[in-house]
Amino acid sequence: MGKLFGTDGIRGEANRYPMNAEIAFGVGQAVAHLFKKNHHRAHVIIGKDTRLSGYMLESSLEAGITSMGGYPYLVGVLPTPGIAFITQSMRADAGIVISASHNPFRDNGLKIFGGNGYKLTDEQENIIEDLILNNKLNDLLPTASEMGKASRIDDVHGRYIVFLKNTFPRNFSMEGMKIVLDTANGATYKVAPDSFVELGAEVEVIHNNPDGMNINAKCGSQHTEDLRKRVVTSGAAIGLAFDGDGDRLIAVDETGHNITGDQILIICASILKKEGKLKNDLLVSTVMSNLGLRVACKKYGFKYHASKVGDRYVLEDMLRLGAVIGGEEAGHIIFLRHHTTGDGIVAAMQLIAAMVKKGKPLSELARMMDIFPQKLINVDVKSKPAIEKVPKLTEAIKQTEKELGDEGRVLVRYSGTQNMCRVMVEGPSEVLTTKYCQQIADIVKSELG
Image 1 (cartoon, rainbow, N blue to C red):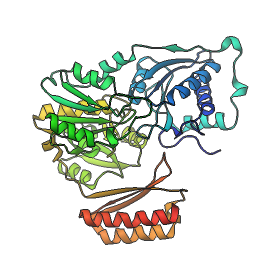
Image 2 (tube, rainbow, N blue to C red):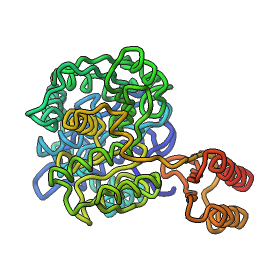
Image 3 (spheres, rainbow, N blue to C red):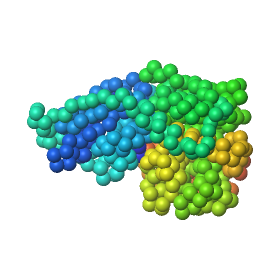
């Protein structure tokens, strides 16, 4: 068996290895053992999104934790960043989120936070993998009298909403502002509307009726078509689209146009700089961010650092370099002044605060950054050999880079959570960008598909 953890926890098709009851049971046991200290039993928060398979995995985690003498606390449906917050605020030892983020309902995953609200280190993940994959857990089980017991906590939504509201400046209000929310039939379907209503906004919500199988289905941050239409027809000031577990945000301006994570970063970082709160004058994003982000950073007088793809790598570089804001073009945005992880609702609060402070519509703020033409094609692959070991592919990349020169770039990388290769090209025009991207994608398909 291979590694369990990818770039964002453990993920796979539900009811199939590694996302089956057996592995979830082992994860529960391993986490309870890892965070047990002397005579202290591990206290572990368990939350989930709205997927049908969440019930099975929740029960398996609960059984695993109690069998190892730990105390699981079940909080039900709550966004991933909400679990990070509750874990930290309740002084629990760990928190486990059952979610596959923006993936279809058939997939599921496990993300684990430590008691400090940060995701586990590579070393901690390696310990968990070793305990499970090398069958070391049975020898660690306590006696029957030392087993743990589970509890349910019913007031977490209220706690999290208070936290979210406190990230919005107290001297500003959302009264009179019309907002449309797309909760992706996922984990934000309750807490997001309540949070904005309590701040005075006039809120309309779409895709907020989860049935276990409609999470992320033609809705949310990956599919904003319905949201864009609703914003325009309702005359709203802004539309906010979250993904299934609520850790990413894509916004829609009042004219119905998408606002990317890169644009949100520039808007919010410029506010922080103006207020003297942009620590080290630094913004962190990833190599996937649009070239326009770097140009805008230079224009507004702050530094830019590109990390590897994945919010955990963005966070690592933020902590290492002393940045307070960072994120991904896809909408994972981290505000370290407010939270330890990416939070779509927190990001929305900061974006709306920027609109209120500037007194400008979102469409005008979005023009702070020019977006270079970019084309991204995802290609399903059967294997993931090192890119440099696929001669035809490396030659195509080199040739395209030569032809683009300083007017664009090429990035070809594998998904960390799916059997997929992502081909991204930026260039001087839509026509050339699409042409080059398709050429490389065709080679990926013929060589690896």
